Every structure is written in C-alpha cells, then in structure tokens.
Length: 249
Image (cartoon, rainbow, N blue to C red; front, side, top):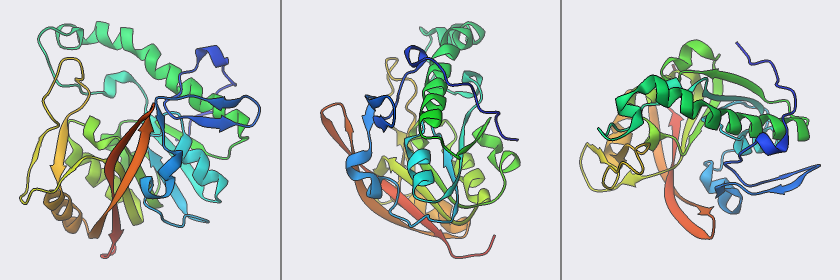
C-alpha cells in the first residue's frame, strides 16, 4: 500500500510547488508560499496525535508541517499524469494524442515527487506515502481521523466524487483547503472564470450551498474560513472549508 521511500534525489531534478525551509539546504522557493496564513489555510485544527491524510500533497509542505506537529501523517498524490483530466481543447496535444501528452508530461510530475522526497530526507520525516487515483481513495488508504485536501478541488473534473471518497476515509473531519467558493445563493458549480487553453487544468467553482448539501448528505456540517497564500509577490485570497462529522460513518 505504501510507497517505498525514494533515495534522496539530486536537487537539480526537483521542482518545488511550496516554498519551504529545509534543514540542510536552507530556503527553497516554490510557486506558492502557504506559510504566512498556514493555520487558516489548513483549517486551524489541532492534529497532534491524529491520523492525518494530506490529499494532493505535491511537494509536501502540509504533510511535513503536520508531521512536525505530532500527527501520524500519510501523504497521497497521483501515481501518474494518466490520472489527470484537463479541460479539452481541440488545439491541444492533450486532446489530440493523450498518450503523447502523458509521455511528455510525466517528467513534470516526477520533478514534484522528487522535491517531496528530497524534503522528506532532509526532515528525516515519518510521513508515509500512497500514490494512486483519488477516485479510488477509500480503497487505497485506511481510515484517518482528519483528511486535508488543499488547493486541488478546482483541478478535478469530478469534484463531487472526490469529496465522497475523501469523506469515506475521514472519521472526524475533512478540510477542503484554500479553494474558490461562490457565495451566490443556489446549488451549482460553474466553470472557474472562463475556461482557457492556457489554463486547462482549472475546472469548477462550487457554490457554498452545494458544498453544504454535499457534506450534509455525507454526515458533516461545514464552516467557511477566509485564508490567503502568496503566489510570488501576489497575495491570493480564497476560502478553506472545515467539515466536521456529525453522523457516524
């Protein structure tokens, strides 16, 4: 079930999604820095001694911080770019020849995974890792106390199924961290801004009412927390959804 730890990769082969400070290497710059508002970004729950699953871990900033805080952490991510579903555009290689796109794109995912394992070695981490399909999450990982899925819902073509899988694993709470929420009344999800061939990996913006309905059906009650993260020098503001179980699984 768990991935065998990779040997420590060469730093030159790593691409960091998150900015972090590594014990031996020092600071590494990623596309996003989630440290300034980490508590709100991750829902502010006390996870000491809890079994925690970090879904969509990428380069592991959340998993490693929760491990450092005393949680028993499992990190989950896609096993291959073949799992990715992008918005289809006729002009893209993704649409024209998926096999070629997969082959051309796999190295990018490996570079993120390499960064995770590089940091894992530097932190002398206890985090366990599972790679697979989020649509089969409940078959791949054991029950957890809390599941965090941060900044990934908008990248999924079928977010409702993914939330269902996440909820099946979570005994106490689910945190949908740093995601776009539409507070217009009504049950809907709509394309996030306008779909663009330049950003085909961004799908939906769900309404707050739809999130409430989905989680109520799954036995949770929700609250919405304002959070921000830094994208370079730009402050990006979104919401974190904290769903607490009120009905036993």
